[in-house]
Length: 157
Image 1 (cartoon, helix red, strand yellow):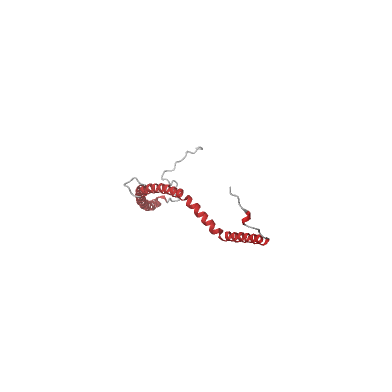
Image 2 (cartoon, rainbow, N blue to C red):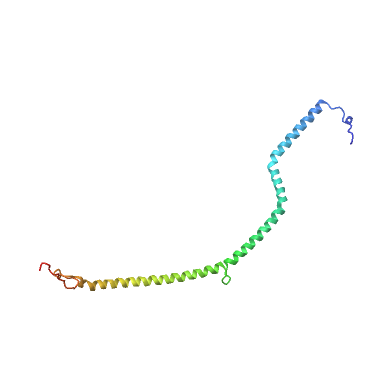
């Protein structure tokens, strides 16, 4: 270990000691002000350096995620595009065509029911018109049903 020779500095006066202390205080003040003023920028630099350290892991994770998403998109693409019958889109098209056919059949049935209803009303009206004169019964007629009245033997005789 080297031995320091203090005699080379010479005698230090109290003015020199005071000037040294003042210089140290001024240096600490300037350093503190510098750190306070540039601390936000320094934090950003530190965060950037840390992010650069995490970059290779992030890139590997992103590549893995992108591969998984590409595979999922290929499966979705296969299902939503026409491929001669086995996709969801083809199945939906078949169902839509079937539903349209059912609607057409239902519409024709509704029209038939309307026609039958109108015919039924006409026939009901005709039946009522034809049967009304026969229903009218004279008040003198004792047997409105067309049967002869039956006479009961009188028990007193």
